[in-house]
Length: 230
Image 1 (cartoon, helix red, strand yellow):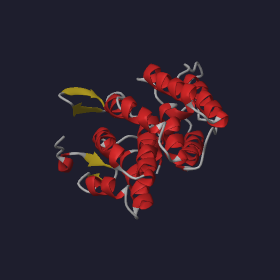
Image 2 (image 1 turned 30 degrees about the vertical axis):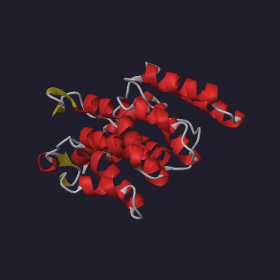
Image 3 (image 1 turned 90 degrees about the vertical axis):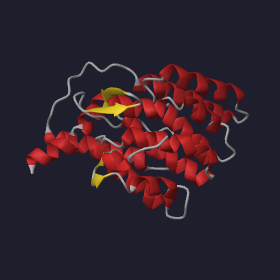
């Protein structure tokens, strides 16, 4: 896939530095690259234009990376997967004009076959990161559940089998519809963003509680509301 990164927007401006940052995920400076990428395409839960292309690029190289690189790549994908954007924000992606949020989430969630193979990786941190990512899927929730169920069925370790079953429960909860209306209160939105970022940025998390859909929607508005409140 040939991408004109100079034509895409990231949080700090043009996305020209993002390909190099993606490559660094599988290098010694990978943790720094992770923080940079997350801050450029999904800061505080708000998606930027380059997000779908970053997700697609990571998915395309993930299988060939080291365990540490794969874990970082999966964490970037999780950041994109839980971030959002207003429906009027659109991009021209794969030949069609679609909502930025839809394009970004599809770029991550169409990777179910790739992520599913990592559920059986040798390194437990890779398996856990893949499990956590799949439990966040919505567009491809059925495929994610099937992959998690298959991995649970074949898991030799009873503790890991139970963890995979818990991930399926998390997937169901993540996709439950919320009836509670979102209240656009700046203080509450800021709290929601901090809560979500703390949850997402912990590489050692296992089955920590995920923020609800309402929390997610509220947090996704923070960056834009902040601009008007300053």
